[in-house]
Image: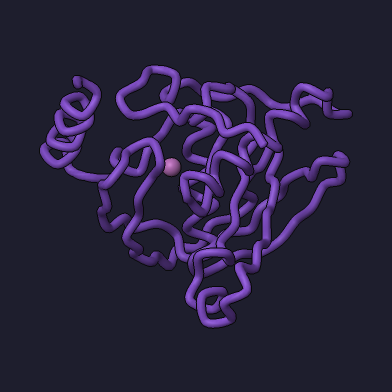
Length: 177
Ligand code: NI
């Protein structure tokens, strides 16, 4: 188990476009993915993109089940780790949905963000197999949020400049101690 440090906005490394991953995965990349999962569960969070631990590769991990109401009700700590490599959206719906978002790189900050409500995604798994699937609801939102990180984009970019500046100031203060 290796929990890595999560970069906090406004770290410039969060603003870099990440590079595509090559297959077969190297041992180093496999270790990065394991560390990303450990870091996400430790945080705790429901998603983490590689740039958030300072690795500029197109990889994200999510688990939209383990902290859900359904999992809490079941009380069995169920987990559903998913690994997304070189993801690309093939389609996004015109219909939008608004969800309250937060981000491990922008701690203790939540805001409503409006995004396409449904998406069709193509990605590769750790074995290099290509998948295509339609997503909607919370998972569609979570995936768009995570893959924005691969473009150097944060959810606060969808807010007004005024709100974003306030958040940036708050984060900078948080760094000084
Ligand atoms: Ni995030």
